[in-house]
Length: 337
Picture 1: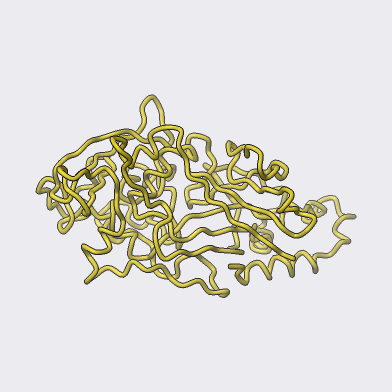
Picture 2 (picture 1 turned 180 degrees about the vertical axis):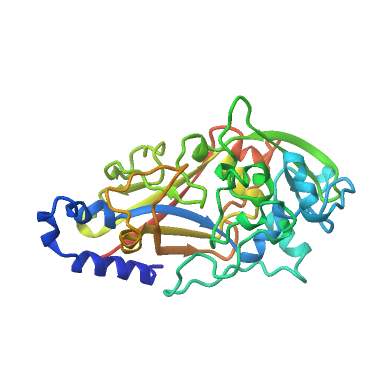
């Protein structure tokens, strides 16, 4: 769905003063890159931000640990409980629908229906309120989508409960532990973030769109610089059509699945007027660790259920989705004809 922010960007494009081209200090405002797609985010239902792996707590806990908050922040591990199976039947896939069913009396797992007036993906609060005892609780974001706590200096130590994405890996990846519905340990593994290892996402969860030229649809897109704009025979920019692809690779797919999956995808342009009003002038460089760009939601896609649904295959655990070269590509099509 195209939202009102897209119309605002089009209005800016058509009304910006071309005479700025003659002013050296302002001419870069006319650069076309200021008005193109610049970022992608991932979201879900608002109440999901206090469920799933966000809330290993007194009502949903492991090995009898009923400590307050999110099980004392899980000792640094990403903790995953499959409420849909026990060890005897296999429990290595995280089934989000089993969590919906278990807490159906108190958990509304339906995402907000999309509206053309939306300024964010999920209109309800998306802060992790179960972490109110954390010393930096005031730093917990309420963005309408997944934050990237892994690169926030105040939140990186509890990324495994705040949710979103794994911190940038050093000598070792980050560990997760998997339990069945009876809180019996099944297995453990390690995850790393393609986004954070390559500094493609800022702390507010904005995945940058690759600044390179549009890639050929049907070829092999290069995702090392972020999400990718694609064109081809059926998707020609000159004909008003294109695709936008975002790839979830390895740990990024695992962590999003564990925290409740993806039900919203957002697309953003720069909020040029806001940045100019704040004294920020183009060109706007990308810096994941110190990003001063401000974004405007221009389009969104919403689904009722998790697009990261997965299952075991023979002896291969479902969560191996994120342990090797497998990946999930989310593709959005735009037709402006």
